[in-house]
Image 1 (tube, rainbow, N blue to C red):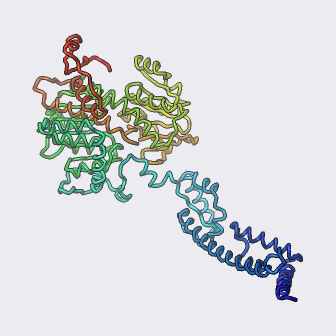
Image 2 (image 1 turned 30 degrees about the vertical axis):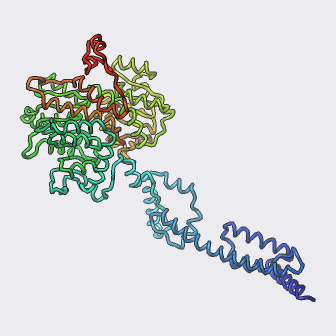
Image 3 (image 1 turned 180 degrees about the vertical axis):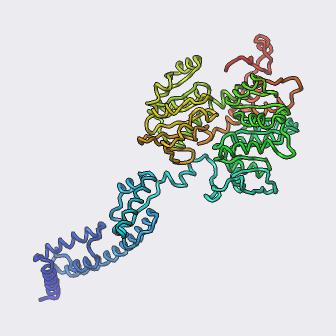
Length: 632
């Protein structure tokens, strides 16, 4: 017998012995079984032990019985053993990777001995069930488990898994606030800025902001805003040498963001001394306020003020040591209201008031009618540049941005009701209709209602559509436009927000009752839950949603800022007797000048009238080109 034949017989006898041990008499069947087990293990199964598989695969193939069969068998043995070693290494690496992934998935610590058992039950379905429940539901389940374990005296043996929902994480909260830097720690957030003793680099402490250390980030935001505000920057360059506001001491109460900061610094460049507070408790960009404070401007504002903080900040601006205000720049009439009520003698020394909101203008007209307005006031809100560009074009863009950032809602196919069809309402309706919404309008004015009908919108009463709408937007400047009765009838998941200045349009106080539950979802987003499980999504607690949940285009704010600056210059430098104690509109010539400052951005070239054409039309070649009663 040759050496090859003896080796072949030896291999066959080994296969027969192994086959008898496993109840298999046919060696060929045994080889097929071994091949199946090896393949299943190679595909990721963990039931077979790799060392046992290596012993079972010790024989080579029988397909060829020639002279190369022994070499082929030994080669297969070595190759399979090498494969087993690689698989053992992969298995150890796989266990370590599972341990790493487990540490990311679990909040509590699970013993390593339970990793394999726990990991086998992990699936997307189980994650969905655990994450989808509300925080309170999970707390109730945990408390029930703890009570059960307490009764039994021992643990159930399985570690509880606690998953953190993304919607409740701090990163989610920060990312859905405005485009501002959010770098303060939770410990700092718990301390009111009024209790902090902060100083800027010049040693001054005449300010109250969230965190003065954020000034560098705020300065970058201001620089970015300047790039998109050509009009106010051009006005600053043209009037810096003349200092038309030299001697002016301006109390400002407006939104404090990067765009307003450009206006504030422009007024200072023109010679004014300023003290500033916020007109909205949710619209302040903390880092911008810090940057202004670092530049030695007295700023009293931070995001998330309480009502008490709000009035305290305005009072700090009005009542300052060795500083007597003589001008007011207001947005909503709050500074005017507080000064008139608390400091009437100071109010009589004011040379002029500039008001830019519907609510504030309404208050001024009420004061004028009652004979309590003792100083001239400029109605900036009803100027052409403010009404058309800020109210219409700005709101047309910012309503979509704020709703998207706050709720991630898809607009196509949604039913929306917009209360009020003024310039703000027109802008909101155009934007929502353009994205595929079915838009309804509520109006009290027949002229505005007819405009809405001609623009293709259905004009209805709020009570007629409240049950079917998905989104409700108020833009009236009135009070109690949306009441508790309306919100009781709204569908589950409906979104409620306000685009008007005042927070009185939605009766939010009627929702603060024991039968309703409030859940804070993210910054400026609250779920209000009814006893039957229905919930509505309330944005910014009924305050101005576009400046609370997002921001407005810097270019539009440039137009408004120019209008405000020119109104202040006009009132401050007007000779005695030009303006009486009444409310005035901005002269048409100033509107045209503001518009001309922004035309170079679009490379626009105006046509000039010839002398003959100007004479024929009865106009001055330099303007104004429209009478005061003209409606653009």
